[in-house]
Amino acid sequence: MRQQLWLFNLYSRSLQKSGLFYGFPSPLKLQKLYCKAIVKQAIEMADICENKFADEKLSTLVTLSGQVDADRNTLSSLITNSAVSAIYLQGQSADVSRLLEEFSHSSTKELGALDDLIKSENRDGLFVLRGGDILHCAATKVFAFYAKRNDDKRIFYCDIDSIDCKGERHLAEFFPAWNPDLQLTTGYIRTGVLIQKSTDIHNFLHFVIDNQDASALALWLADYYLREVKLSIEHIPLCLVHQTFKYSLQWDRELRKLNNEQFIVTKAEVIGLAKVEWYKETQPLVSLVIPTKNAKNLVQMCISSILSKTSYQNFEILLIDNNSDDPEALAYFDKLVDSEDKVRLLRYPHEFNYSAINNFAVAHAKGEIVGLINNDIEVISANWLTDMVGHTLRADIGCVGAKLLYPDMRIQHAGVVMGYGGGAGHAHKYFPRYHPGYLNRLAVTNNFSAVTAACLLVKKSDFDAVGGLNQDDLTVAFNDVDFCLRIRELGRQNLYCAEAELFHHESISRGADDTLEKRQRFENELDYLQRKWPELIKNDPAYNPNLTLRFENFSIRE
Image (tube, rainbow, N blue to C red; front, top):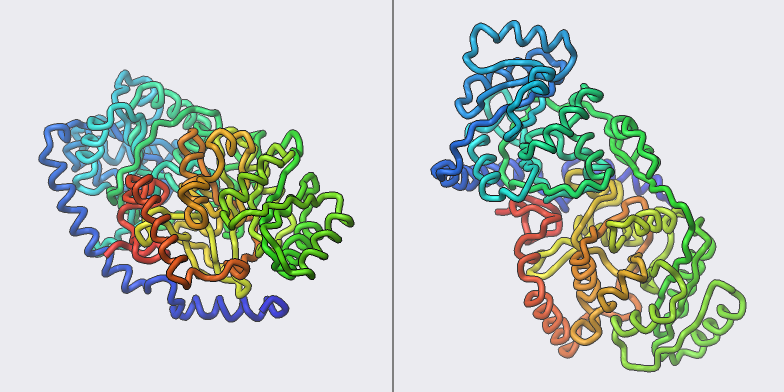
């Protein structure tokens, strides 16, 4: 398959188009699941609407799409909404004037343009909606309820779906909680946002003056994050906005408008999305830790691929020998150290404990950045380390993981989701490499609560700050998940780097958990994870409570 990659990709794409790809439910199945979800959400919204906090009225700003009929439908729906107190329009001046003139005689609500809103003294909440989008009948009350219940939060956004001419809802987009890197790469929050505080409203309105397109809201949120404004933002996991048509948005072009000097924007693998390559003032030393016991062929493949294919050259390799007894492997290790200046060999002559081995190695690491690498990893993309280091150096980023593939080009790892199987699992596992994933999250860099230590980069200072991996309770399984969650408690975001692609020949060297002793050890470690992180297992902020935990495929919860 590697030799005939073009043929494999042709076959895989044909399989996807046929609808036979088993890793994701068919459109018909998804629609049935969403219809059930709509019923559940309607019950929840009905309870909210009975709450006394849900009686607030909101001013609304509509960023016009330029599609006259779509914008007209949005304005008509807002005029008949009793919870909307005032409506303002932002967009091309001709479109704004036309709609204001058309509706001024039929509406008792205050209507105006962006300038009127800027001059207005009303700064107690502004709802932003994109032209062509329709509010759910309970949307304003639900937003008001959340705003009152979470008065420490400043910005609120919701899930969205699409609605056709028959009024049927479909194609739900169930978003994660605030995910800054997903915003940078896709602009996923683009409509249906309540800006609660006057300072944020003021900031947004003056940003919009210079950004009149329908992408203004998405760009503003990206810009707000990039200017190190600590966004206090809350996600409402309910579909409260319905899209009536699909925008054709070249997000990579839009993001370039910010002219931000921290990164370079190029096209992502999926057309219209962005790859963000962060600027590095220096190229710090990276210590790549590779534990092994014997496995000469695997180690040779791993280290040879790193040395020959990696464009980023300021790294050292710490090969940790854990009781190897194969003469061929031992001879290779010694020869490797003698012939390669970048490689150091350390002996760990104790019982296998993955956490302890890595902690031991990191104590000997010279690098500012530490990379935890399995001995069954094989480099594919030359820039894998360049891209991962760029993210790791960011002040608010903790652990950075890669896109790991099985040799047959299916996904082994693309971020870790808490709650899968009652513990944690791999997002989009077994999906074909070319698949964009749910909300394009397989194809672009974005934040997850955890990533796998099969290929993980982290600042050495952060590693030390949390005391490394838990070698007392998690000797084999879930130590990387627990480590990432403790890094997250430092105020960091963990990250899946979609551009860093490597093969992972998973668990070949250690073997499967197929003995009574290994199964018992796994159960004990799963039990520890569940006791230590119950809230995150129950509700992973990088996932969505409307999505399934039975499968690793982002299907809708049944």
